[in-house]
Length: 218
Ligand code: AMP
Image 1 (cartoon, rainbow, N blue to C red):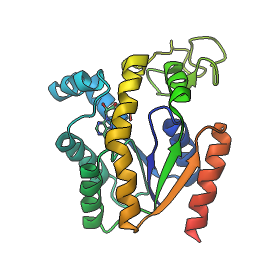
Image 2: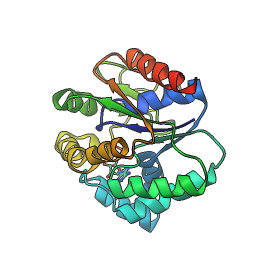
Image 3: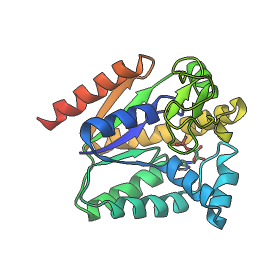
Image 4: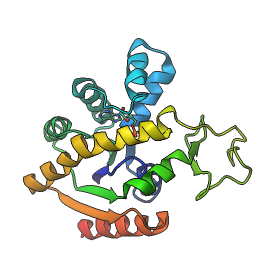
């Protein structure tokens, strides 16, 4: 199964991606995670990416497309869960091209909807384990011991771009640049579009997504 997971920052894409991978076994490719790994490597490209990400703006399409196409081709033959990519229509078109060449069309685009104020609360409370990436929320999904990862015992961290002013900028980028991607998929009419209410509990959101994807398999 090949699925694109969309939704504003903080809609719960990361949480749902974990659950989807566990149930359907596809390879999870998160553009944000790939860029953060590049940043952590200390490379020149990583430093450039970090400077953009810190502002909440989008990384230029040519850079994104090159990195993501490479990652997608590297796992050719596997199921695919794309998370955070594509985020512009140009990226959507480039993805289509890559997948067409691989003869591996998308099965579904899943959109998790959430409202702005809820998103700001969710993101600013988000913390994660620096080594495993496991996600918590100070209020809604706290670790057993405050500030500490349940499994590794490491101190949890907040992403630089999870501060409120940056979150607002990321929401703006989503509305202006990423929402048109949804229209792009609607217009092509080639892929199933699944819209779920991201304001429910994570388990309910997951149940809705899984039911829609399984219905598509029959
Ligand atoms: P995320 O973890 O998906 O929220 O991504 C964090 C940041 O990485 C975004 O705010 C952008 O600066 C950058 N980024 C991630 N994916 C993309 C993409 N597909 N296109 C452009 N920039 C991206």
